[in-house]
Image 1: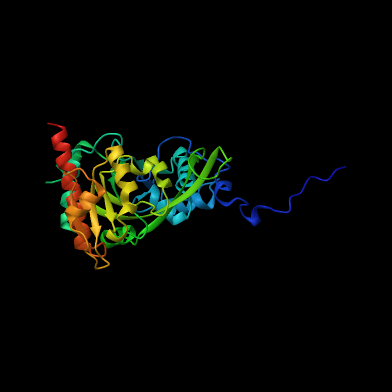
Image 2: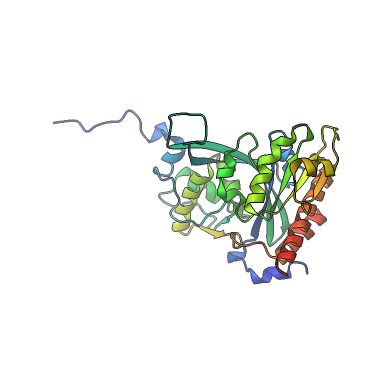
Length: 124
Length: 198
C-alpha cells in the first residue's frame, strides 16, 4: 500500500508564490470590468462568506463604508493592480461588491464634467 | 448648481464618478510632492507588472520574447463633491516602461508634465507621449530648488512645444501652486474641447 503523497507544506505555510497563489494562478480578471479608478463598495458589511480568501475579506472590510478605487485597494493590499482586479472579479461574481466604472473612457471628457472638476479645485 | 450636468450620469448604487489627472516628468522632478501637496490622503503607491516584447527594444541582445517590468506609481485623491472624485497619478519616473501601461493614460482628463530646468531633457519622453496620444497637457516648471535659470518662453522653446500648450512656473511643495497648475490644465483642456466642438 502506498502512502498518500504528503507535501511538506500545508495551508499554514502560507502561499508559496504570494500574489498569484491568492488568485489560483489566474492573471486576468474574469471580465474587463475594472479600471484603475473604478470605484468599489461592499454590498454587505458582513464579510462572513464561505470560500473567501483573507484578501477577499480584507477588500470587503476596506470597502464597507465609503467607496475605494481599484488603485487604493491595490495599494492597501500591497498587491499589483492585476492581482487586485482578479480578486475583485471573484467578489463581483458573488455579488459581494458593487462597482462604478469611470465615464466612457475612450471619449473626450465633456465640458460639464471638466467645469465641475475645475470648480472643485478652485474651492480647495 | 455646478454639478447639474451629472444628473445625466446617475451612479449605480449612488457611487460617485471618478476621474483622473496624470502628473508626469523625470525622476526627482517632484511628481509625488505635487500629488501630496493637494491630495486629501497621503500619497499611496500601487504597482503593475508590464509585459512587453523585448526584441529590438533593449540591449539584451540575443534575448527575444516577453519581458516583464514592475512599475510603481504614487497617487492621491481629491473629493470634489459627493458625486465626483479626482485621482492624481504620478507616473513612474525612473524608467520608460510606463509608456507601455496603456490604461494609465486612458480616459485621463489631462496631464501635468513637471519639468526640472536642471534636467529639462528628462521630461521629453512624457511630452512626446502626450502629444502622440493627443492627451491634453500643460508643462509646470518646478522651481522648488530655487533655480530659475529659464523663463517660460525659454522652456517652451527648449521643449519645442505647441504655442497653445501653457507653461507655468510652480513650486510642487505648495498647495496653492499645485492648485494653479491643475486649474491651468483644466482650463486648457476645456479650451481644447470647445475649439474641437466648434
